[in-house]
Length: 636
Ligand code: ADP
Ligand code: MG
Image 1: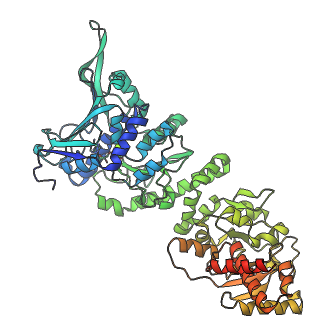
Image 2: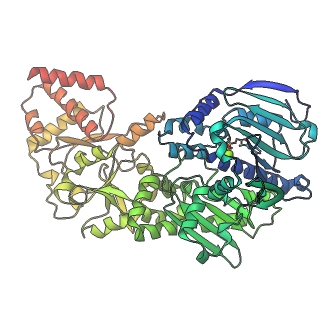
């Protein structure tokens, strides 16, 4: 049905299945969170006003003629109702059905998956996932929405009504001003909310940051009836001041925290924040927060529209954060308020604005500076940050060339340094511990920390006390390929060819592979000829201590571990050419010289297979490996 055709009178419809599930959850497990409905409805009313303001940038006639954009909260003790009204954008019939009958957001599945059972936290999730409207049914047994979309005439006004059990009814209405009323008919056990003082308290707690005025009726004490009664005068009940516009010195730590929690629907304090007013050629205010926990949809790289809110002179304009911050900073929450753009700026101009671009660049620097400062001065909190968002920040190494060095300083890694292996070291700390002969920063990538720690490649490094960074994240190999060096020191993969083991530094006592006996050399040659279809070459290793063999790839090839990640991701990378290195001092090798031809071939294949496995690769033919292993075992 199009927005402009006259609608049918009356339609009864069913909620989408997920909505039913959600409503059930709300009603049965969140009844102890009676207050959040108001936060959600006020937030929707405020969004609706923001949307109207944004639409009016292109269509100024849409704005209310004689009144400001505002929200009114009222209640009726006799009818047991609370109503939240706004004069924002309103909804067409089609929008009412879509917005209030379904859950469009892909995050909803995650929402269900992430319910913790902790009612406090679950209630917060409701806000984060934009399923806020349905929280009405925590306290109401009937909800009625009456709305008219801005720009449409009275006969297109619609009402929506539901008891939240499974169906809703949409019918014609006769509202003649744009905006929306949400009327809740309260359940018996929620009557305590029918109280002006109580509602004001909730509004102050959750909605003080709303920059539009929220009105309620003034109340007076009636001496005869001995009760508070509502008068016909409205008064503003929220501060409606933009916290970020106040001077820093006037704002308490607690105010920042409460502001953050309310505006970004978080139940925890932020870890760090930075608040700056930039004056001069360009004029704007930045207020950025680093949350303590990642929102559940943070891995969804497309869903990043709620991080940064752009205001022009305190009027909300948009929260499309990709224009305001790069994706690798999508965990940042905050506000940018500029005086450089005109309030009636069009969307197109916003998209191409050089001012916005300059603000974005400056914001990146500001946030990286904030993190750098935290890393230096708030080490414990920085660790929390790193565990939560480190993997996302790593994306910046490949995506933001101009800030690569700054980001590199913020990276933290597990490493073989110290007794139990250090879980958390910076590249600068690594460099400060490097020995004078060491050519670069050594690292190994792997599937997991355990497999990195136990890699045969590490043996010679451990033996000689030379530190190696252990990189178990999927993104690490990609990131390192962009990082390449730090502080003038190259990053060197110890699982690849192309560096000289005898130059790893330290007090390294490393055998020269050339020194092995002629008979050993001929065994190596023989293995190489038997395995020639599977490996590029076979060599004597000087890097192994306890393991019989390991595999390497050439410097510019993908490691077996990376090949596996790509294959799992459905790609088809070429298999890298493997180099098999053998430990001539290992009993396995010594045993080879006693074997007859047939056994020799089986043992050679087994040697290669186990080297691939230990180096984090996948066997192309696991069944052949098992056959070979069994055959050898049965002969012993
Ligand atoms: P969210 O606000 O995160 O989108 P909600 O469940 O709170 O999720 O609201 C669902 C949708 O219903 C909103 O996105 C909006 O399109 C619509 N809506 C709710 N309240 C209003 C309102 N007061 N005015 C206009 N649209 C509204
Ligand atoms: Mg909402």
